[in-house]
Length: 441
Image 1: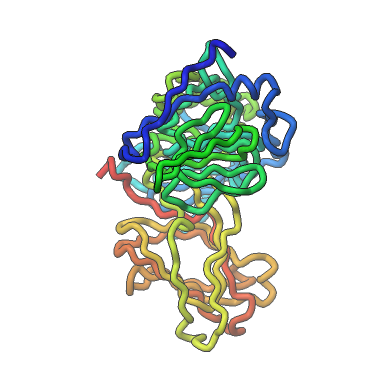
Image 2 (image 1 turned 135 degrees about the vertical axis):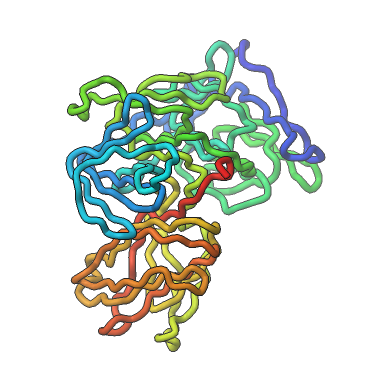
């Protein structure tokens, strides 16, 4: 341990937060590697391996106009500028166009939004890391473990290699499964017993030192008592391309291309990537098996999850006497693009402020258990202007929609159907608002 990295402390409370340099890791990685410091609640470092689902799901391709295509598989051109769906290609969107042969779809902005891909995702729940992982300020995630290499603290990742850790870019360090803290204006250290310390993390080494923002006093906690560390969020833009993989990795890329491998052999297909820089170590480029990919987003900064916005709930005009008005319920704890599924219960009126000049794209379903009696009418309004009206029942339980929201005021009304307000609830899957990223405007 004599060759461990020197301590580099962060600035004190009087320094503006954005200028406080985060210190580098100290000796904790070597202690973890040697087994002298066990992670809280377990005997050592969790495996990098993640459970891989055996049943493959279809893919949903989301175009720039919000329309969606369901395909069994897809391929990316060698140039990286076109996607082609393989096998079935059912198309749904504003016109419910039905089905047709696979088409080549551009991934670059073009004159035909319905031919420009914004995102591709497996239909199903995203994979969470099963062990220790880092989350960076821009939303990237690295499952793996800490280690010392040539006296420098690195984070070991299964296919990106050894990544240097820039604590100015770190949002969270998760060592064991522990609930994240509520939103806070201070850094939060969660201990193994569930206690939380708030302040300013000035040291992250053999001990974690938390400094009080009010009086500058500090408290030192042995690292083995720490479950997770969450630093004040400093939002940063995503890269041009964002990739999700089965092991829970989320990584920003400068480029992603298909290879010259066997396009018909899904087990052998590879994607060549060029990673966005800034971490100093790790593989700047390489290949990843297509079968390991769970989602890809082009221009991810222009994708806003619907679940990110706060809804106000009011009685529906035709059911004013209803005493129970539940807020939208999140059904997933994670989803690609952050677009978690939502369940809305009616009759009710839901309203949220969303980005102007955006497109609401989602798949809507009357859940199977609700279809025996469920019968309701959905209305979507852009401000005071109705942009969609649709009935949901056992006869017509599903729809994929893409509607423009120009005013920035989205209103969702669930009204009672012919049978009244019985089992009237809808599930919104992968709901998102598409807009042009700021850098493109």
